[in-house]
Length: 525
Image (tube, rainbow, N blue to C red):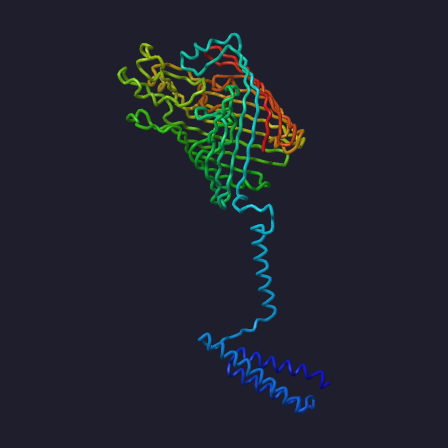
């Protein structure tokens, strides 16, 4: 029994003495000193320890205490500071500290990919590249009964060919970069083939004697999401509106600023998803403005709508838009001596179809001007209604119906007569219906996906601005009616073949019938 207790008593005594020296508190040292002596004496009285053993233990403890005190004083003298305190840290606290440090190191290692031979800087993870390339064969077929192109050119229409069939091979390349700048802030840029004089096409026609192609900056924008469901764009942005190609060609991008508010858009289970979109877009900045007659040209646009998903097998979406063009109508030069004064009122880009007049009064009077400048006769304020119904009863095959209607409510015969001296009949309505069957979005994630469609379009002369409508149907512009049919089939993952046939005739005016066939090989990366 005595042999078993001796190590315990010795350890207890030394621990008490060590703790007392470390804490260096006078009262506590005295208390521990007295407690230790009483404990040793009790053990001697109980004959657990002999007096000789107790004396030896105390002597050794005093020697160790004297040595530690000397070391502490020497350290104090060297540092020139107060008494050094060596705080006792419990083992549980040590374990908590070790675990916290370990978690921080592991988190940093994962973030910075320590030991990963394929590791890249963190900022590269915030970049996303996307692109596609398309090879196209296009055949433009003209009816024998068409009026010669010179007849169209004499009234200002951009028509260069009406009788000779044309075969073209074309290529389109688009490469985009989306960067997550920070939480809620994204930047996007895209370069494409094409040129800076045609906003509705990014095609490059082959056959330039081996010459190289040009690349243009197609998009450059910032997108902000300050709160959930609210998105802001600025710069050269993709089309923010719910639409078809009746009003806006698929390649049209918008310059300016737009805002979209869509509460619940990120909640898949939500049945009703309203949205509202608005934007302000400069079309042409006029330098050296001539009084109040020629001003900067703008587009103010707004759209509201609702998406309704009553079940997983049906979805409906409707959008009502209003697109107001400001200062796009031409201004006639007042006298022959002011030739060229208001030429900037003419549009920078036109396709064909809209009602025109010569803005130079001298050319209107005697036709002596060799290259007359044509301006738009009416104002354009477009009311637009778009509806899509998507049924998935045969999932993954969908049946999708689309209806789009547009009317130029800004057409005013009185204003046109005062502006041009001409009486122009209103042709201001347009609509398009389309039925699509197959895989709805044609994601090209696997082969054997397919899609087929058939549709009909009727677009009167001044229903929309001819500059921005579809550039393929009727080879672009308005004053056309006809049908379209086509389809797509995925050959491989991210690679698909598509074909379209579009047959159109003029609605009024000079005869012009055009059939267009397009065969495309597409690859997305």
